[in-house]
Image: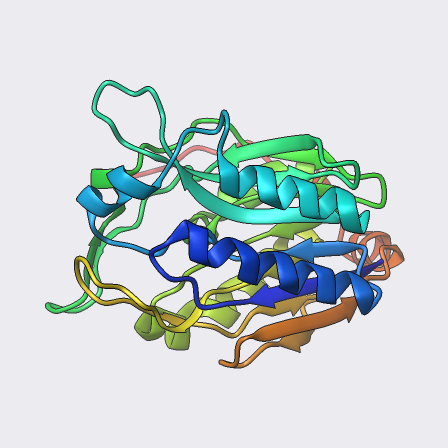
Length: 277
């Protein structure tokens, strides 16, 4: 399977981002990709709750989701819509940061709401409170895409190794980590964490990323790290997208999952233990 990771710089306007991403999906399919992946918050990068209230829409009738489903069907590809912000019916009005696996016929084969919220103080100037605008998910998800079973995660989930072990033990062979990583934490932790998740699970890890300075008119400005990454089940980095926007292609040999797990069968070596304090 040839996979294409789309590295993009989304703006705060879903209507502007949709045609750009659709064109990239077409280009990726023309280059032979059968599995195309987009980053976190593909439809809208914004820190303004008031702006998100105006431009984000529910899943039902969502034009961004509908457009991406149409494009997946038109190109006949599996499409991981890394995540989009969608309105929910929660009483507090918070959104969902939702990842979709779209089949080659355009149907939604699976969806996942980001579980771990990015509530951090990276520096005194760079702080995030994702949980103020987004409600966390509660379910881990593995989707059977035919060519592989895929465990779905989003960005900050990457720091919670137990989730990835659960997905791998649940049958995942590929782990997806669409992201909009901070440049500060990205430079320090992005590659080591992705390589660790691959090595621990014997899975391919595919991490399409937002990159660069985003066009934002409301709320604080936002820059993201880029470096879309693909890591093999033995831990080798197969692809690093650097900082440039573009389409990054990689061939996935799924036999490498079985090979890695035969060599180190740690997924079947769990032991019960207690904590002494």
